Length: 282
Image (tube, rainbow, N blue to C red; front, side, top):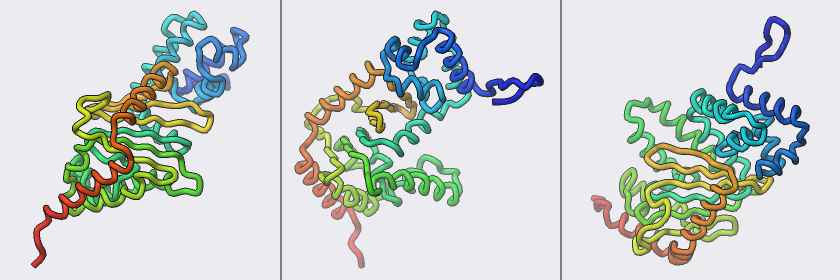
């Protein structure tokens, strides 16, 4: 907020304007957080979070606010401005949720997810995608990604589930040695107390999200946010309809993927192939 000449707080960002206008419309309508939550079919903590600015007003809640208050496209318009001001914040917001999540479910079609990547695998990816970056910039990217993994190693880690397309096991990111070590690194997580990894085999044929990336992040209040990405373009959703649909699709992928035991065998077989790819030492 900024202060004008009359000493009045004025929103300086679209996000602040959204929060202030939502508070004004809700109080003017004489609605409690629960009352508004019932109207828009979201939870009370969710509506409260949107109003105070701790949750992004992801679609379609803005449209529901406009209907509830009869404000035309006011909230939808402010949300569009938020996206223009902070085009990358949707993923950043999901990273904040990831750090606090009690359950993380991921699917990836072509790369090992960041939470499972080794340092060498990360460096290989960052060097290829940022060919002009300096060594210092690459190391900064690696450090940031490694810091995300601390959540899985803490005293109270979230439940973690990953489904990986079989293609990931055969893509030698960084070369055979890096890839073999990468596969070995997540073998212990295939079927541990708090994590599960399944491989989606080629034999499964086509399935939902086979060309993209999907994350389901469940917060301590039991609300779930969806982040999905394809061709480098991502979007986040936390409305009940989208979340329910994505959870259903994820459950179907679980059913068609290999069991944890068969997944471990598939990973071990891929490791052996990478062993065979290495040139003999002289």
